Image: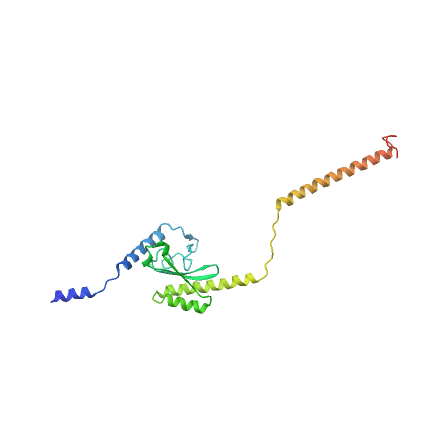
Length: 203
């Protein structure tokens, strides 16, 4: 009787889905390689380590913000002035061209926040919080970008440095030639007045 009850209790316990367990294990392996060995998106400074991946939600290189080491990931992306919510799940891991699902967010800030809450309803709170932070920052810089477009901008003209140097050389040469011609003219007039040429020139 005890063996049957123990068998029933073990069979009633629901184990975690196999694809979730394998995804978590592969995420740990990927992060171990990225953190300890090499990552082409990693940018190290004296104080902090940054990530250049376009899908990184914070721009920092850490376990929770890495888009490569998380099978379930969400971020905000900007294209041509519009914001998109990008989501990655482990169910689409076998389809690289369909790995990211993009949802166009409304231009209204409050509506965009509500859509993030509805799309990421069953996601971890840390993911939703980071996406909302990124949405706030990107909305602010898009507003500044529109304001800068409306302001009058000074027009910049190209400076042809080589042409200016060449023209300056030509002017200097022409000025030297003009001075030489004037000195020759004065010398000839002086000789003519002194009678050096005799009766050659009759005026």
